[in-house]
Image (cartoon, rainbow, N blue to C red):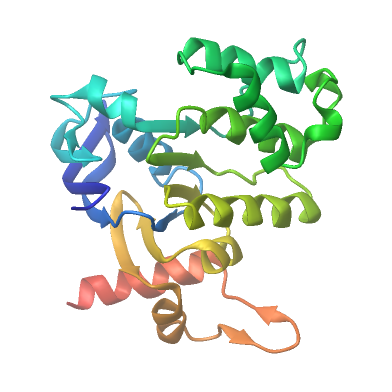
Amino acid sequence: MEAIKVTGLTKSYKKNEVLKGVSFSVERGQIFALLGSNGAGKTTAINILTTLIPADGGVATVNGFDVAKQPDKVRQSISLTGQFAAVDDILTGRENLQLIADLRHVSNPAQTAADLLAKFDLTKAADRRAQTYSGGMRRRLDIAMSLIGNPPVIFLDEPTTGLDPEARKSMWQTIKTLASGGTTVFLTTQYLDEADELADRVAILHDGVIVANDRPQNLKKQLPGWKVKMVEQQPSLDDVFAHFTKRTEDK
């Protein structure tokens, strides 16, 4: 059974059609990247799948539960990390984790916090206020908080936006570690290299429509100009969208 299955998803805001019949599926334990530029509808798709907003049409299931009909079951199965770290700056890293553990009724909040601090390389900063953390540290803490309770599916909405190159690479390793432990990871991104580096499968969302959905290596074979030498040269997002939109129209 798929961890996520979406069929014919639609969403409009007044006359603006954001999603126009989007369909895809995500296997359990897979890293799935939804690639698209700003305004493509990526966050709208995540908000629907995490029960934050309703769809206008279509069917979506997460962990086997219908998003519209069984929202409580869906929420028990997931965690969501948005584009901006949702940590309490006044609390320490340890206190942030223990607070969420208490709210989720974890049996041993202190041990859970200690384990996650170690897993995300935050032990040395555990008792500092989160406001003193770097952007990469805050992001790692945010994801650590989202893992409390061991949700089988985690949603990451543009997890590396605003991070410096070193912090981005660290975040990539964190995401790979999540998947290696059996967690299904659904992430949105507007970075070609990020989708290529992380994802088992990439869906390209353009103007509310999925214009391609395949393994990264297969997509790269179809894209003229994507070459790997000493320095990787990649086409722009506009080139990607133009190429796959044309192929879709030609079918």
